[in-house]
Every structure is written in C-alpha cells, then in structure tokens.
Length: 96
Image (cartoon, rainbow, N blue to C red; front, side):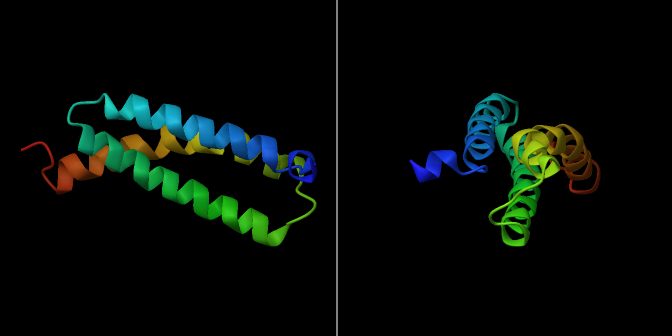
C-alpha cells in the first residue's frame, strides 16, 4: 500500500483520467487529426513539466506541485490547443 500513500498517486491518476477524457472529446472534432494534434502538443508540455517536478522533488511535493499535476493538463489544453490550431490553420493551411 505504499504506492497508494505516495503523495503523487492521486494527482497522477486524476491527470491520466483527464487525459483519456480529453483524448475522447478531441477525437470527436472535425478534422480529428487537427484537434488530436493540438492536444498532443499541450499534453507533451504537461508531461514534460510533470517529469521535471518528479525529478526536483521526488519525495516531498509542494501543494502547488500537486495542484499543477491535478489540473495543469486541463489548463494547458485550454490555453495551448487554440494556439496550436490557429498556427496550423494560418501558417500550414491545415484546412485546405
């Protein structure tokens, strides 16, 4: 039961669950490859930052670290996905 008592376990489970929900929702977009690509960019940024948090504070995360791991994926997705979609549509002609 040591894993369940780890301070990172519940925030990570919430982040993984949120990742699955966001993948499902963005997969419903039209065209799905545009929306899934935008989510992929924002998810990559979130998981890189999460790994940096683990490396810096493996045993004693701050409350801010845990809040970021719980809700950071949602916040980054809401902010970064529209920017990524705008970039692909404007500069790469993704929609035609």
